[in-house]
Image (cartoon, rainbow, N blue to C red; front, side, top):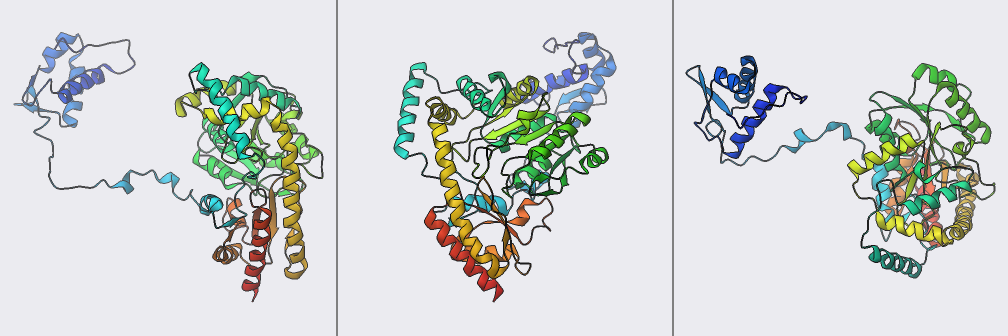
Length: 487
């Protein structure tokens, strides 16, 4: 059998090389049923290998019902003979094939978010950018410019790391936020959830712990759990994660990362003070624990000045920084990025090349167009004015309910979220059922806790996406539903 070749420099065991080549010839029909294979002794001599090697190869072929022994000495192909052909219909049993570790991760959060875009529903649920900041005619003109320019190059691709020009613009933008970076330190993604997924899959091992705030976007703790990590919740107040006992928690739990949503976070709309940020950074230096910082809301400040990020305070490279344009760009245009040590970015780019293959060219080009012509910075001012006005409109309505129903909330100084505590008699699930009957939806608080038994009388409102009319009507529905439950 000179058509079997053995490569002893290969890591694959020799017996498996023999087995796989004979199996391939059987599958291809080169060796039909009844074909007699050489004896173990003869084939071992032809190939210059030990007889036991051929014996193991033949044993593997027998185990797969591809050959059978004949009179105890020779072997014949029995591929078709042993096939269990049956004309009876047998449907695939999908339940047995589906991986169970994904069960339970789809939740009310996803359903409520997806309903944000239903035409006849008022949604306070989704964290989505305002619709009217970028005029449709302007977007169309920008795309026409992009397409004309790209047609001259005859391609619509970006590198795995993201468009080079866009990465340069991002580093200029970051310089205004006190973060020094080169384009080589930047990796482009479609959204922060995707970025976090790649980071954790790159560095997290099954069982590793990640310290996070006790209330966090469902996407964050689900991503950690899907990567095989342990969620380690730490209490927080209006100033962010409480750091008083964080060193003890670190020593006891040995976490791989500390994850922080540092600016006008989701869901509370609070921001971490500079003192707390410095405490966490000091702990990172002391214990050599990386910090993953999400900073999506940092440009949406109203009563306070722009808040420095932990990354801007990092004297080394301990912080992996994530930023998304999802709240300040055209709704549905997804562009986010990671800034980190070059070694991390190189590995992330390699993972993108394996898993994504082709990044979202159109979204990156539109983002680049707005950043290059200066319109994006102009729009940031407009977003701040618009979101602040909508926040005030929603808060005015809530203020009227504070005394009447015992509702509690803290007016955020930035961001797009309101965290509301309901009277103890009202469960947010029951309230949601009542408001949905009337055409309004929101996010119940339990979705933001890793333990669903918590947050029963909390809820999160988003005010960036609904119109003024939608806010007024939605708050009417909210009040009606509370009245209904209390009565």
